[in-house]
Length: 371
Ligand SMILES: Cc1ncc(COP(=O)(O)O)c(C=O)c1O
Image (cartoon, rainbow, N blue to C red; front, top):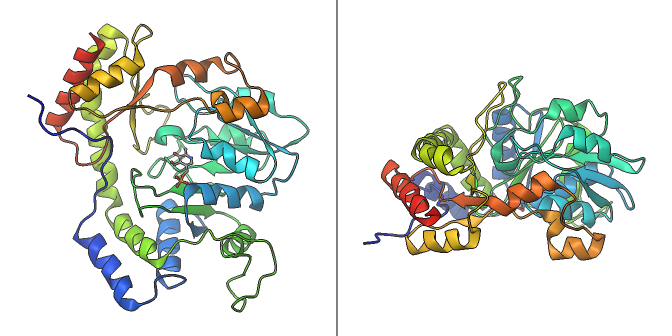
C-alpha cells in the first residue's frame, strides 16, 4: 500500500520565520527598509565576502553581475551547458553570446581546460556554475585572467579546498533563494561582492538606476526593479539563523542516500553524486543520480511516481533546448559529457526533513523501477 507521496522538495519554515515576517508587516515598512542592509550584512559575514547586495532572484543577481564586470553587446561569455537555463539567458539579456564548453565528468562543473579552449578575442567574462552545490574549480578559472561571475545559486554552504566559502573569492557571485534552495525567501537572491564599485553600481541598478544616496525619482543610469522586499529579507535573516542546522540535515540525508543506493551503484551502475575530494566541500542542494545506460528514464520516473516517489529529469543540456538550437544552431554531439549526463540524470526527493525510512522507500522504489 502506498502511503503519502514523497515530494521532491520541502522548505523548513517555523515560528522564527513567522515571527520575523509578522514583525515586518506590523512595522508598516515592507520595502526599502532596514531588513535589507541587515540581511546583506549577515549574509556577507556568513560567506566571508566584503559586500553583499540583495536582489529579487538569482537570475537578477547574475544579470547585474555581468553588467558590473562590463559584459556588453557582441561579446562572449564562456559558461556551462549543464546548468539551469538562467545562467545562459542572462548573457543574452546584455546582447552578448553564451559560449558553452563541456563539463568535468566527476564534478559536472564547467571543465577549465574546455573553457580555456573556448576563449576567443571576444570573450569578456567566464561564468562558472557551482552545479548541485559542488564547488567549481575557481583557482583554475582565475588562472585564465578574465573577469569571473559565479553562479552560486545552488551552492550556499559550499567551501573551496583553500577554505574560502563559495562566493567569498571577491568575484560577483549570485545565490538564489527559491523555495527548494538551502535558504529560501520564497523568491529572492543575493550577490556577494569584493568590489565597492560593483556594490555601488548594483545597488543603483537593482533600484531603477537610483543610487542609495539619491533622492526619490532621481535616476542617473539605466536600472531595473530587482529589489528584494523587507518581508523577504526578514524571512532570509530567520533562515540564516538556522542555516548550519539546515545544511547539516541536508548532508545527513545525502549520507543516508549514499548508503541506501550503494547496492544499486555497485550492481546496476547507478551514478551517485561525486564525493568531496581534494578539500572541496559540497553545499548539499539536490540529490541527482545518473541512471544506468540501459534504463528508460521516462519510464523510471513514471514507475517511481506510481510507487509514491516524486522525481524529475534534472538538468537538461541548455544548448539542446529548442530556443538555443534555433538561435545558435547547436546540435547533439557538441558537448558529449554534458549530453550523456543530462540524458541520464534524475533528481530524487531531497530536503532536510527527509527521514531515513523515506529514503529506504525511495531506494526500494528505484530498485523496483529499474527492474
Ligand atoms: C544554477 C542556477 N542558476 C540560476 C538560477 C536562477 O535562480 P532564480 O530562480 O532565483 O532566478 C537557479 C535557480 O533555480 C539555478 O539553479
